[in-house]
Image 1 (cartoon, rainbow, N blue to C red):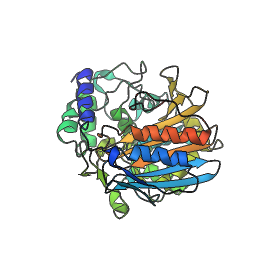
Image 2 (tube, helix red, strand yellow):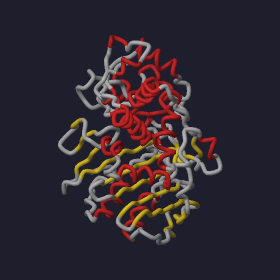
Image 3 (cartoon, rainbow, N blue to C red):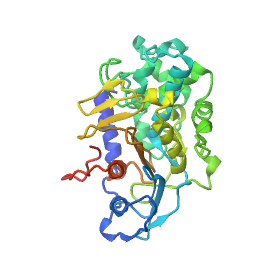
Image 4 (tube, rainbow, N blue to C red):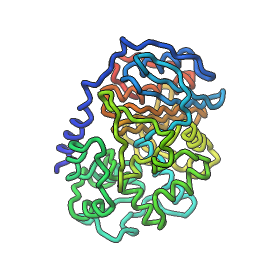
Length: 385
């Protein structure tokens, strides 16, 4: 399947939720003050949550000069209430890619891996047409690999409740060696790829002889004390927040199989704060290395390993990634120079017509924490700066 066809179908999938249940005019505000959150920040939370169906909740963490602060909010019976959900488990979706790139940074800093090495050296099969990609290219989305496996796109359309569950390692190898159609030559342009990030996780498994799960637990989760972060949702069934479909009903959880490194992590706001604190620690060689720019996208955007770097008009450089699945949307922003960070976890489907407001909220809350004014927006669909 040609790349432009894949992109068109993916767009159709994402916009299929445009007639979602969103009635902000019915929202009754009963949000309460919380330590560390100003009236302005509480109003920002209300403005976003009011667009989502009942049973949607936000679990928000903020790191600023006052310390670590949490805010939970739920829409129920068209009333927005403050709740405690910092220890509730959500799918974080593609923020998982940042974790996968942390594992790559670990291999570089601790074990001497050259990120510009070809991944072919650790594979027992050849990519179709002798395509050759590097670790760095898989991490910063310059590999030229398509967004999703071409022939697999129909699963995304017709099995959107759990589209990746049958894409096994065997099918990954078969696709890459027999059916691969590149979007671009490796290293020539930035093109976001779930396939590339999932493949990076697979390659790191081959390189280390350990599973992706083992790598996460040994090198990130355990050292940082992220005790409620996992790939296996059954570990925390009692804490797992049910995803909400773009039309308001319960959404199925996603199983990403061989692409788990692209979006398969479950976590909590409390655990994500621990990851953010590590990212903000300039003395940590692994996380500091991960934040070094690796590719320039435009005058205001760069890629690090897994992170997007977005330049504000005042010169601040914001590190950002979001995530979205069938029942969840998340966003994480950091300003290492100010020592600030915002994590927003939600159980609203990425297919919701205003799912991007989760991203916007994380940027706006970070601006307030940094003492930077929020820009006027003529188009309310604007996501980032």
